[in-house]
Amino acid sequence: MIQSQRKRVAVIGGGISGIAAAKVLKQQGVSAVIFEKDAALGGVWADAYPDVRLQNIASQYHLSDFPWPTKPDLHPSAAQVREYLRQAVAHFALDVRLQHTVIHLTEQTDGWLVRHESPAGVHEERFDYVIVAVGQYSDRSHRPRFPGQQHFRGTLITDADVSSLDVFDGQRTVVVGFGKTALDMATWAAGRSARVHHVFRTPRWLLPERILGVHFTFALFNRLGTVMMPSWSHPTAVERFLHRRLGSAVSSFWRMVESIFRLQMMRHAVKGDSVAEKRLLTVLPQHQLVPDLRSATALAPERYYRYVADGQITPHHGAVRGFTRTSVELSNGDSIACDLVMMCVGSERPTFPFLPSQYRQLLEEEVGGPQLFRHLVHPRIPRLGFVGFNHGFMHVPIVEVGTLWLAALFRDELALPTVAEMDESIHHIRAWKRQHIHFEPASGSATSTRYQQYLDTLLKDLGISPYRKLPNVVAEVFARYEARDYRDASREYDRKRERRTRILRPIRVHM
Image (tube, rainbow, N blue to C red):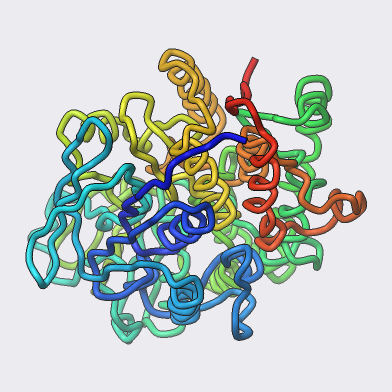
């Protein structure tokens, strides 16, 4: 058995990622303190825009060993998520310090000196390690500027400015963007505004709630579905054979999925209504589906396509070129008279103002977010880990297993490769993403729809079986994976740890 001393870790961020990380650390015998700058738990859920809901279903978004205490909606509301997090913190008796802003980390030879500010003043504490869990989307919404904007007589806002959907009432509304927020806002505005125009540079593929009548999670959250997902890493022999030897079969599979999505979308137009078909074709992507399977992939709002077909939402394929006093001018020549313009064009790239300047530069220079080995650590920043930036479609298990990986590293049970080898791995993944995934501010750090391959890789690093439903082979292949399938990962690691005599080493993810 490998012996290790009890470590002390500061977790920056009190959202779902920070809470999940602190829970795993505590279960692993590591002392963890959560520092949250706001007065409430929840991170992005603490100040979410009205009526927002989780895109995943409830059974895939909870701590693996703490199911929802009360039955939530299939797609939980922000209020339900916040209440769940409050109960989770109480259940696991986590050390959470609200209204504690980490203002600076000072590197020491054996850890970090954490300076934090609270209503009680400024204090400093020493920790062996720090985990940054502020999340990819914690920074402010992006607010681009356009020619003539200062003369516009209407209102120009982002989703961060919306405290009530009454903002749309009676307005001639323009919503800019094609992510989840833009689609939500355009759909809600259609029931309230005098007119709704949806403006976007590029239409994106949206996931339908149901695929041929079956909830989308049954297709995308089982082994049969995820094994078809092209990825920078295929950690199982079956996947490697499929993607290297049977690439044409994989391509045919995704062309079939595209056809199904296209048919389901176009059925919203009444047969023979050429105007409705034209509007729907405006929001139909002309590119392939797979490059759009990324963190920004959105679930199609229930009524969005119907509103487009019916003319309650008028789509415009073009970029905002500028403003006049009464209108928005687009690159395609359209001029839209409006009273309210909502910019939903993503968040600013994450910043780390509490870190020493040389480390900030390493993390902030990449436009797609921090470039990290295993999406968890930077090769040149010691004793610092990241969770939540590895955002994927099974976010909570990703954070939990990622934290288990970090705990093994912190206790010297897992040895990192050389800096050169970690750089090689990072370069490989970055190059693959740039070639195969459409850009987004989170593209560098997110795992998105490659969550299964990512989780399998981390579990193999830790010497744990990635097949969480075995010995039931049928369930392993066909059943939907959920958060609870990972509830025994920490205990399994502990059992094997008792007998382990060698240091663990990460597997290679590319050849």
